[in-house]
Image (tube, rainbow, N blue to C red):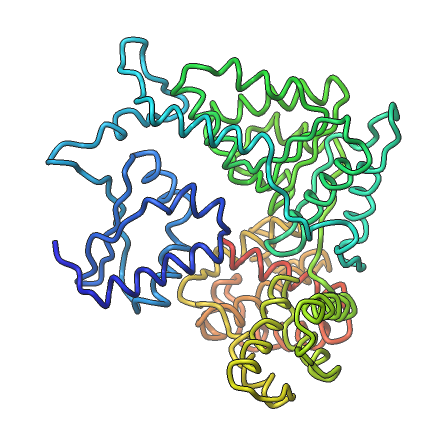
Length: 475
């Protein structure tokens, strides 16, 4: 099957975007072996070497892959992920790569030595993870949106030898880019510096699953279990990606063993434990039994401090970078998202200045950041999704949101839902009104204007609405 050269070139850019957005570890784990097969008639066909990779990508990453691919290839209808064939027969890896809950029988062929060697190398590397040297408590910008999470993490990291474990487990939840991983890394750095005798393990949920699958292949699950028995502090990131009954049972065993023996467990996820729909109820209950802390979207003052911190870091690397205070203030007001988005905006302006040899002005900043507040793809977001997320966030049932009830506990979430529907979808006011219990379009317009006015003066509401937007965008 022939693929045009320019399509291959654009596919290379898709791979680069995936690497940049997901990070090196996730990209290497799930996308490094993906290949472009064909792109025609509104369908993108890609291939991977194993059924496990195919299933994982289709379950967790197909929407992101579609979105990033469209940015380089143009709009298309669908993505088809297939398992690559060799000589008309599925590769041996396809047969070998079984789901964790269905290990191969004893009579099955052993994995090839090269596979075992690779598994051992990856596993060994993850038992001693390389932390980002810049993600420390000293570089974490504290504001009203993350103050409690920061204080809790410092309390754990600075606990005196022999002191009782007060927050166990400690569960941090926030949207992407709000500092969860930074705080986990900061705890690991602090413990390494002040308590080198404590054994710390820092894993993502995906790496936990990869290591477990490899242990199954090598028929060495006992060694996999033993590594947790020797841990004093377990740090787990991206917990929402933990999937599969067997995987969850294995983690639950390790978790219970550590907590019951009063060793520290810190978990980070995109949503609170109650919203981890794919996680067993008993596990959710145990997670809620510790301290659960959220990180909200940064307010204006925190965004200013984040930008100032990032700018000072840039100047240390390159003193020719000069950004006026009014431009930093413009960015803080224009980009109302996460610290990662603020840093991205700063990088874009700096790069534009250097590539074009132009002074950084407000006009330049406005030009470079003109798309930073672009509306999300309304065609992908449904009003039903908004109703579900708003109801879950405010603990209000769907029937109440659609009912005539006028209690404030229902009216405010309903108005916020209408506001989000207007801002994030292409639906008309009458259509939104119909979907919100058959209301008139004037009711929707009133709700939209009221929320717009309130978020200008109510920082807490503004943060709450920004969080809901992020949750809706993440699906």
